[in-house]
Length: 315
Picture 1 (cartoon, rainbow, N blue to C red):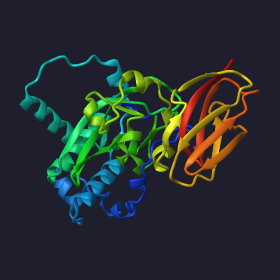
Picture 2: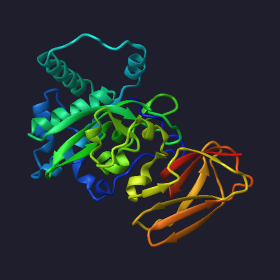
Picture 3: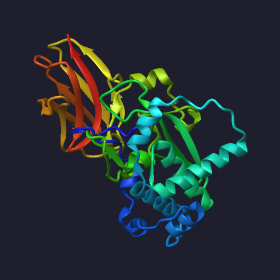
Picture 4: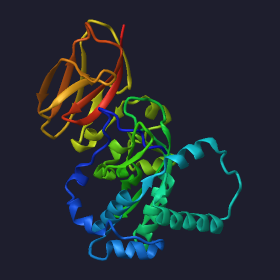
């Protein structure tokens, strides 16, 4: 639910498909306003002909207009869950009121972002689902993360994963929301998306390689570069590594992209450590000398893009 503050070295997920989109052409619709989802959706998408462009415009509008409500998040953390049973009609009415309120206030947490994105898509005849589950925004932490919500939108005969909350910006150390558009979370690669999104219904992983809670908790946290550079077959595949001091640690992965600025940093100290790099036909390996390595979290980067992170403990 919460957008984790993007501190130094914790950049988020990125998508190669998203990177090919000319997002600048949607600047003109940012000023659209209103509280009727049908009217807002029509105004946002008026100048675009394809469904792809229309949904992109909706994503762009939502991520540039709705700010994360930190006060609401703190309040929800302390409140008890509503155990009252509602009829389908009552639920739909509550959801519609929620969207209207969000369009008016332009504030919300993940549920409001996702309900609004869904409502705007459906207003122009695009199938869109509200997906609930867990999100792991901080790549240096293992576990389930926090309760979170996102969407799946149906385009070109396929479902695509979208997280407008994480695409909008971040909450800084002073608990203030800052807009910072992240195109990564539009039509993100399903295999990478599941590294930090675990839906309650496993079918919304949109992959044949379904993971369970145990696997989700254990695997390394990923960041912006993981999808941006189409990484796969990451080894070791555990977020916490207990290693023998003096024995070199080798981390490897595959990417079709040419990665020319690989580096490893201590997250706590913000200090780069010396490593040996090797690249052979799309397979990258990073070897770390563990003789003087301190226990802690280490981020693996290409430039400023976080690829993934490990908690390393030399014995």
